[in-house]
Image (cartoon, rainbow, N blue to C red; front, side, top):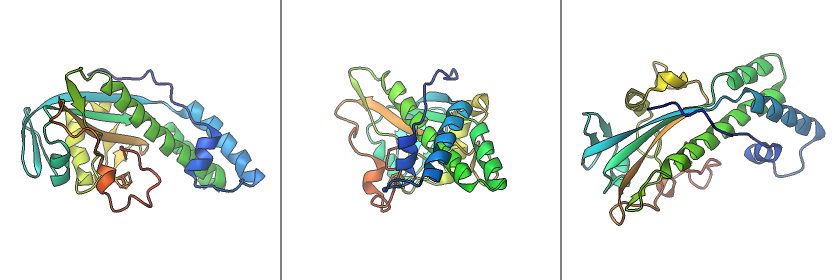
Amino acid sequence: MPVLCSWNITIEIDELLRGSGMRDKPRPAIRRAYREAVRIANTLNEPRAVHGCFPLAHIGDNTLELCNGTTLTSEELAAHMRGVDKLIVMGWTIGPKLESAATEQMNEGSQILGYGLDLCGSLLTEKLGRALYETLSADVSEEETKTSPMAPGQLDWDPGAQRDILQLIPAEAIGMSLTQSAVLRPKKSGTAVFGVGKRGEVQSNATPCDKCPRREQCNHRWHIH
Ligand code: SF4
């Protein structure tokens, strides 16, 4: 399970403005701070990812049993993975430097720059998760198809399942760990799984967001948290 670190993931000012929900023209001071945030973010961003492929032994009503003995518990996850033969487990991070820079700016009273840096970090993390999914999807054979990704914390899948996920992949190789309360460190990190199985037996179009009650308000309605 090699570490994937050749990512060309950057952010643009327009993405940051959109991500911050600004509809009108931003004030010059905000635009200036956000330009600086983007410049710093693209310098401090250190994208890295790991993944693993795990054959499935059994899918129950609310469990996914892997051949290695790990059981993941969630009714929605089990339904999402119906028909799948193997589970691809992904972990990714942009590293700790950007979140430290954001905290530093906020502590020094530069709230707009600090907020801009923090948001850049979240957007870069989302982009990396998406790029990882797309890269690994390219390995799916002609006879197979894939599900959309699902992450701990989506629908009824307990966020604490991060613990199970981090035991499946060499998260420490990219500096990822969990706090006691199952929060990922660095903060700008993510995990998710997707399934691969025979064409016609796997739901390839459904996403967890389709069923989410927060769907209409969610700004991050992409398939990975
Ligand atoms: S709509 Fe938003 S909150 Fe709901 S599952 Fe999708 S990303 Fe998560």
